[in-house]
Image 1 (tube, chains in turn brown, yellow):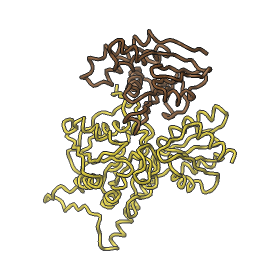
Image 2 (cartoon, rainbow over the protein chains, first blue to last red):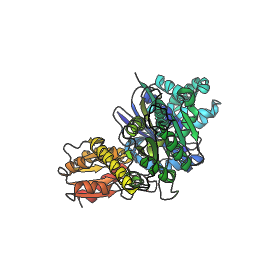
Image 3 (cartoon, each protein chain N blue to C red):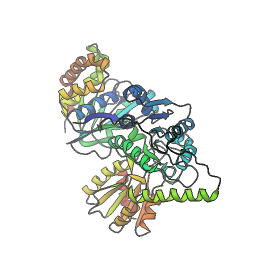
Image 4 (cartoon, rainbow over the protein chains, first blue to last red):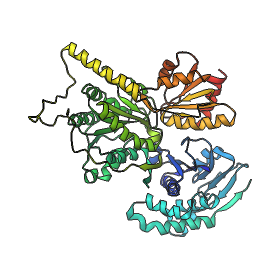
Length: 183
Length: 355
């Protein structure tokens, strides 16, 4: 199994940390992982993206231009990465702020209204975890207990009290994700 | 079981420095390697092992602090990125001239000048052919994963002390910034003794230790140069490192190190899906360069594509190894851009197979 994912959105939406938690969850079940961020000016505002690869085998290129799955959290990223999904691949997006929805007909498309749901739960900061939950519902590449272990490893100890809240968000993401196009 | 962690390449360098029993780190921040010192400062290694970590006032100061610490027989290292490494060249030449061990990490970014903060491999010439003045060599190791970033810190120090020669880890912003799974080696205690050549005060039981790179008598300076050259021949004979990936039945070959070699691995996979028998040769030591291994592969394959994030630097060494026997071409992106696997395969098809 090799899953090649791009996660993209605005800086501050938790794109890089969602990728890190996913990658750490992979480490927890002793898979090979790589996490390759965009770094530089875009980190200081603007778009941010990260390529995460989880595999049972040694990972070749951490730099890719075509992906199994794209997780998209803003319009600029949708415009940029919709064309980079493999035919038959998966697009997961939050339509908050999206005015030009996806148009590809040869990919599976899933919608998760994560920003709205996180606000409803009064935990806006866990928006990325709602998205992660939605992704894991579609592709259960890592187990929940390893996500929890991954959270423990990637959060500093002083924030470990937030882990239950984050796991609730993951659960909620699994519940609200809906498929809008199937191939 | 050994400890598994998800770490950035830069963080792995820093943790490995503490664990291999380094005595000191002196550095100055620059993107994309700033996490090395950030991590070291946060870890408080002075409490873990007694290791000293100091932010110097500049890269020139850092390398001269390394010179001083190394002269005392200490395990000292620094890290920087391209423009900062350029500033260190004078110090590196002095350290090589004084035959002192140290470890220098270059997390390369796009140049020339201040250039960009994105990854590049355009410092190959500087790292392998000199950079500073005089006939000297650094031992240069090129990691291709976060695991190797960790392991090569230990190996680098071992080589530096074995040969009393500065060692450089030549990596780039991509491996520095990316996170992968790392298996950490166990803590090695800091050494409590100094090598006999160290300048630590003269006891009555031995002669004076003198650390210098100055010799006004040209006869003696020539003798010293001959001694250095003898050391380099020994390094060239014993310390060549490389990896061959799917080379056994290869008709064509990619040669690439570091990040480029990772991207090429995917290109190999894509090529083989199309029935093109291509292999990947990955130099791990850039000095000493694996000339003989490439020469022997050049008798088997029909053509070589050198892939490097530069305008073409390593290709000169490949051509020296191949002696014009077969076609050798270069493909690279530069200025901070990275090639993608399909693009490299396309270059193999047009420049080498079809060319």
